[in-house]
Length: 118
Image 1: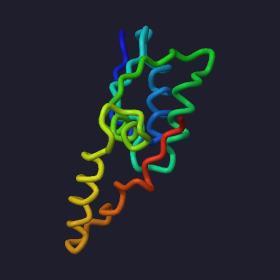
Image 2: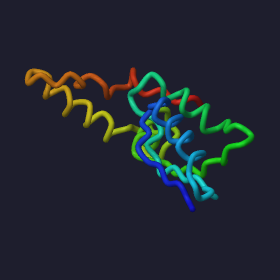
Image 3: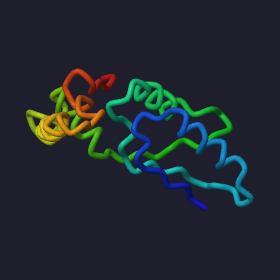
Image 4: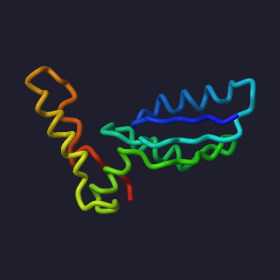
C-alpha cells in the first residue's frame, strides 16, 4: 500500500498526525509520496521541510514532487524557471482586493511571507 499526501501547506501538526496514522494501518505502507504544496504562507513551513528531509529511522523516506507553492517560492528566490513569482504576486494582489469585504487572509501572499531555506 502507498500513502499519497498533498497540500500540507506548512501544517506540521497535520503532517505528524498523518505519520502517526500511517503507523496504525493494518496493511504496511510501503511508500510515502508527497505531491507538492509542502510550504505555504505559514510560519511552520520550515519545520515541515526539516521534518520531511529528516524522517525518523522507523519512518519511510518521502518521495516529493514540487507543487505550486514551491514553484512560486523558487521563483521568488531566483531559482525557478521564471524571473518573478508572478502567480504568487498576482494572487497576493487578488487576495488584497478582497480585504474591504472582510477577507482575513488577504495579506498572506507576499514576498515577506514566502521563505524557503536554500
